[in-house]
Image (cartoon, rainbow, N blue to C red):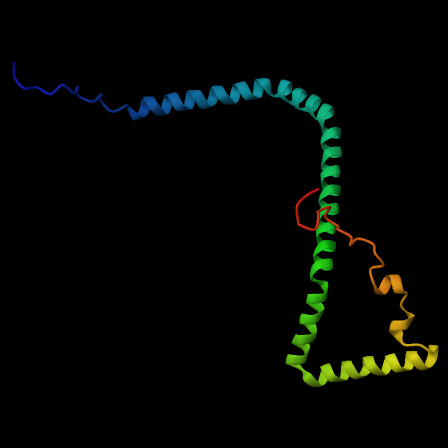
Length: 153
């Protein structure tokens, strides 16, 4: 009753030639099965394609249209919210980069406003209808369908 270990000895390593032969037989049988079943698989694929492809194409078109609509709505919403800030930032950047060009543009704008006033007898701002100039009591448009608090309706 000696102190022999209770863990058995590991099995001998596999024979590489036998393992290679088994892999080769499995690979050949898989290929043969695939070649045998290929007409059936092709017929099944064709029937599934005929059955589901038109619906899939229709769903893809609908998803594409919804994506375009949502991106356009998001762009409009961003433009509505950030448009004035963007134009103000562009004017500030133009003034910082080229004060002379900024002054020239400003002068040209004033000159065109004077010419408009001489030609039509009123200031350019007076030519803009009142309901366009001010909101006229209509609620602001919300292109994304959200409330003013930013939560979905």
